Image 1 (tube, rainbow, N blue to C red):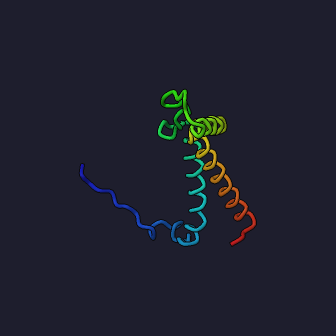
Image 2: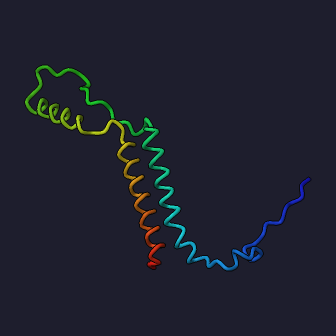
Length: 116
């Protein structure tokens, strides 16, 4: 039962003989990268991994008699916390989805117009 099946070479398959490798690689690689970016972005956007979570803006301890600079820094921190995402995976995932989609659309339009 240890018989090894022969692995066909590229030249033994008639369809692969006709396909030129460099041209095919140049045409398929952007599509593969676009699909990969789209998939990774969608996973990050939906999963929200804890490693990309931003800690809360709550102070570590109460500074009642803090200086003016500390109070200004705390107000700035609280203002930024209102607009900052809770998890970076939202922003990163959305950016990857848009980049992958743009790459796929561009590649599709290149194929339609036969621009090389």
